[in-house]
Image 1 (cartoon, one colour):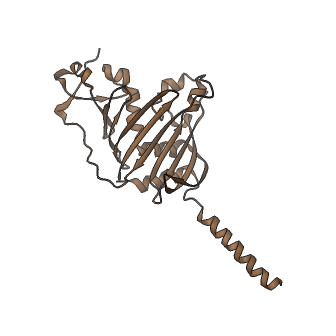
Image 2: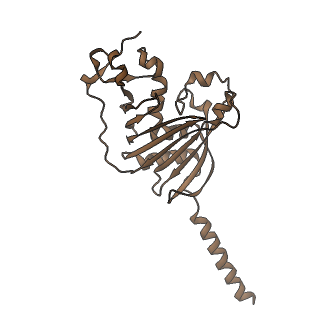
Image 3: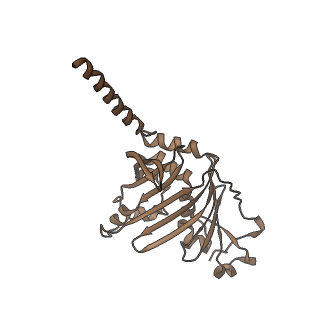
Length: 264
């Protein structure tokens, strides 16, 4: 009886262990994850849609990105300022299409301006930091760099995402390790005012079978908690990526269409 039972036990154990192996994920730590995904998306274009929700406030963006290790180019439309605003990120410079209601403030009525967090023009001084961060945070390459520098892998599994089998990773981002390169439009000044009460932000990322991101979620509830907002408040950014491998011709606006709003 033992001679016949032993092979059966071995077969059962083999099947069980084989099933466990098939569920293993590709990356064992945050750096390996960031490096692997960076290699998978280098030179590829994708469509994306972002949703920022904080309590009753909600903002949506959509666009296309061409990802490259040398720098991502993207074009997007967002309702962040209350009306549709087109942004372009090319060669690490953010361009904003001036809303019609503000076009008269640009000499010559030119439709585009450069936006920067440290710009001296009125547009940059009021919205520059937030818009600069918003455009750059839609860049998956920047998110991967933040994971590489400040991420800790806290869990992983296989999960179904809208009918697609994915590898699902959970991470924590150490805000102190990011320095001034903060996610989700957060400014260094705002984080500094929290007096070190903000430690880590949870993040989740879902990858397809070639290690390209399909969705990235950043939980911003710790920011509200550190600011004294009740624990029940929910805040997160969700970015979904589709049609990897699509064609995307993303260029900076023509030079003769870029104006400069005089400093006030």
